[in-house]
Every structure is written in C-alpha cells, then in structure tokens.
Image 1: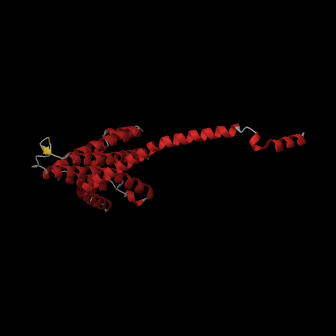
Image 2: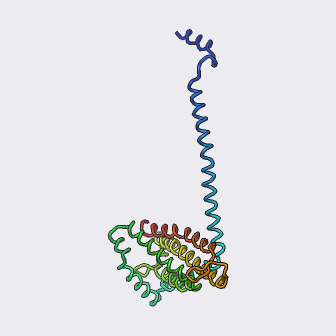
Image 3: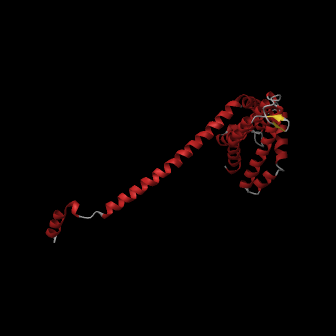
Length: 250
C-alpha cells in the first residue's frame, strides 16, 4: 500500500493534480485586493478631512492667540493666588471657600451626585459649563468682558484646592492628581471660549465702519471670524465633556 501511494505521488507531479484550493485562495486574494483598493480612497478622504479639521482649528487658535493668552493670564494668576491664600490658612480665603462650596451643595448637580447618579451629575455639569462659557463668550463682544469673569473663576478654582477640613488637596498624590486634572480640563475650555469671545469683539470693533462687512445685530463681523470662533468651540466642547466625566465618574 505504501509503495503504491509512493508511486502514485511520484508519477502525478505537481502539475498533474488540480490545485482547486490554490485557485480559490487566489480568487479570494484578488477579491481582497479589489476591496482594499476600493477602500483606499475612503481612507485617504478621511485622513484628508482630519487634517483639514486640525488645520482649521490651528489657524483659528493662531488668530485668537493674543486674546486667549489674556484670558489665560486673567485665570491663572487668581488661581495661584487663591490656592496660596487658602493653603496658608488665610481666614478670608477659607471663608469664601466654605461659602461657595456650601452654596453649591444645593445644586441639582450635587443632588444627583448624592443619589449616586454620577452620569446625570456629569451631564448636568457639562451643560452648566457650556452655558456659562457661552455667556462668557458673548461678553467678549464688549472685548474686556471675559477678563473679570475669568479672574473670578480662577479665584474660585484656587480656593477649592483645599478640602472641607481646609487641608490642601495637593499634599497627597491621589487628591492632587484629581484636583489638577479636573481644574485643567475645566479651565482650559473656559480660557479658549472666553478668548474666542474677546477675539470676536475685537474684530467687530475694528470693522465697525467697514461697510463691506455684513452687519449682524448692529455688529460687523466677517464670516471667517465667526467660523474661527466655531472651530475654537469645536475644540472646547469635548474638553468640557472630558472634564465633567472625569470629575464625577473617576
């Protein structure tokens, strides 16, 4: 039996045996190549779309960079000052901290959190932050409007760097990480949207006598500037969401 099998194998040769499996694999490979080639334009289009979005956001940030920097400075200095005063045990700073936190305890957000509905608390916090940021952006039409708002927001952020026992959250790695990440994810989008509002207000003031620019609610603002603000908001919104999710779900 072994000799017969061996002789058949030797006599048949590779070419004499119909390689059905190989042909099927070739057909599948060819079909796969066609699918891959068909998908390449879609992949290239998606990559090009992402690059365009990144480019538009970068350009918008570049045009509004001065106003964003002003709002950043107006936020960060009070943040550091509030944190330093609260940590040092300053009575005024600690009383302000307790007053602000006490007032927040009656909010719908805190009620949801106490009921262990953290997802709802995060969503409410996100909505509240977006609404507050929108108001701040609108005040930017007066150019300087976001500056005092940013300063107060930074001041409050610094005050809450101490806990209910007035101990610094920065003294231990866990609370320090939580505070710093939350503060950053909350503050950065506020700075972006506040700076965007200032940028729009400054553009409107500079173009106030330019009859070639269409008037919007008595303000002459070029479409390109409005789009810039939209791109900055498109960057800020997911950061707001990330901040709320981290604050309440972590």
